[in-house]
Image (cartoon, rainbow, N blue to C red):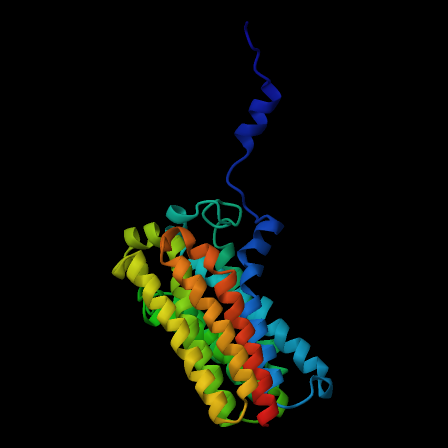
Length: 308
């Protein structure tokens, strides 16, 4: 049977070139909404730990959550995808930039525009909020962009992200509500949870193992191998939580310390399963392991509130 070509369809296909404008859905995907939760949650932990009622200035709470999640975290994701477009072409070619759904330099323009927006919004949170916003924007570009590109290191890169996702927004939430420097106890606990997030970020690197290896990114799964990297990540998550537990006992908050202990034991059980096949189970661990970790953060925040 002879098939007659549809000349109209052929001419239409021939005139369609590379996309010149991004798809709206692809722009939204570029900001990775699923990643917004950790810094938003950490900011709320800071608000709780400050000892100041959120009803005292609800607009500062709402604006800070918006800044920490969709704006600063979304900006960091856009910057990372732009700087990682060659790696993503190997690991995840379906992503907005390598797939062509966000063409040309649109990814870069979005990241730069949102960096400016972050600074404008951060200014509304007062000097402490603005200062923290400046640090967050600089950290996002230092992680992804040349010539610094701390992402190349499996130690410095996850460490910077952990501090930026957990410690910095926690500190910001506490400082903005208190309109001043947070208490020593708040700073220490926020720092410990940020350090523990190094392990979470290391496990997140498992999904980019092949592309990282081919492009010279020395993530811990590449340098140490999946098994040793998963072990380091697990210890990295657990030890800061042990420190938080001991501090809460010392500061007179035993019930909160016991609840975090229970959450840690459940994480250890999940870590034991993770060790049976780290490469396959790393995405699974993000559910129970990370969920229990961030639950402990809020328990610690209420403990600090009581101390205040």
